[in-house]
Image (cartoon, rainbow, N blue to C red):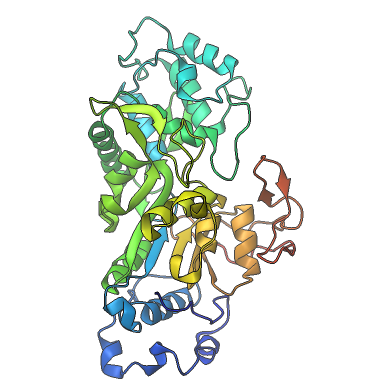
Length: 431
């Protein structure tokens, strides 16, 4: 059994106030000075907002090997992080797709409708016309020179629309378990091996890390970021967590072979990467079918590590909770101690954290509503470490439209007890 969650409030109170809330009977308080001297420490040279470093350190000290005898004897606490704009600045899947399009690595499908059950007839027809039928099925499309094809592909990925503005997806899906344009991305790599896709992602990674901060690129007629960086504070946090006996996971709505190309640079091995995983054919090549979770079968994207899906995958892989129960919030000992994210995609995973739920502020409604409300005292808010956003002028619409229902309609954001979170002002930001 893991220790009980930290009871101290993790809002914007002072470190001294937080110290006063820790019961004297906790393991942390009983530690000797000698024991604390060997506790791994977060770097004091890396800037965090307010007292976030100290609050994270306190949770690590209490729940890791320094303050938790169970952690010292093999009962490892869990930490989980989103990848895009949490561990890294900028979206690595977009970078990999951009690289693939520029280097003719997208293979022509027999029918574009095979790639998604929600792709509209118009989208299927438009992609067929834009990308042509001269290239044999399974051969590379000439996207490096065919701007029309590249534009339609990237427009569907980034906006879920065609270049004419019409919707690319239609039908029904659970909006708390999948997003068609996210599920569609790994389908673009069908026909390749995972090793090939990882090699493409490594090449896009090298280019992005070499590009200056703020650099952009053209993908067809679209403009996209050309750079990415590992957030130094998150890399340092992962380093310290591992030294303190935590089991650290990445839980991403990106593509598994793409995320694998980056994860090692943050100290996370492939066995601890959770992302969209496509099934392979007998030749080891990526198919259009993706793994399921929580009793849901493999499909073309019905469920994925997205909102509630991030909880499901973490529950299954990190805690061994299987079947429909994996979609449910678990008892504290079967939840992450620390979790980090930046978007509504991550809100369920971060909200499950029993010690500290870290949010990098990208002005996303639901996660910021919950973070500012801080109903259970575990939320920490930090501006983005690289190019932080300025203050959001309008209040977050928590009481009306901040939540996305399973059918995709907006609604109020509610606490665990069902009460509605009032609108929240943006107070932790850059600039």
